[in-house]
Image (cartoon, rainbow, N blue to C red; front, side, top):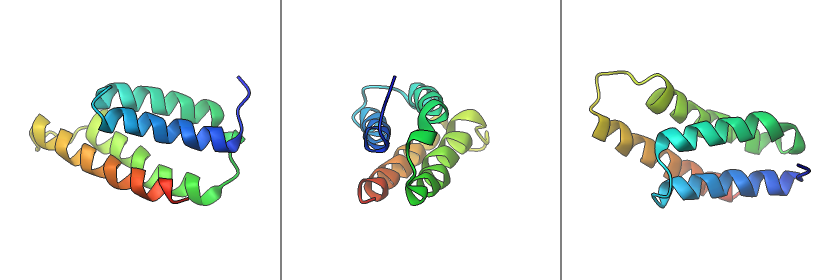
Length: 95
């Protein structure tokens, strides 16, 4: 698949939107976004976008999906993950 940097960003934003709209679970989101990012990150040379994505979305996936702390209820984990992705979506849209 041949994609541009703009398509890369748009796809990542659409994946976040699918989660925020309830079309996919946080686990599904984490899996598809990680696979896509790993495969196509080199198509985008916007370092600020990469930095913000990794510091917000990737960290949220790590903390709330991949390695859940165990001290928070599943509902609270979902709430905090949703909040993190909602904030990241707003930030990333502006880049």
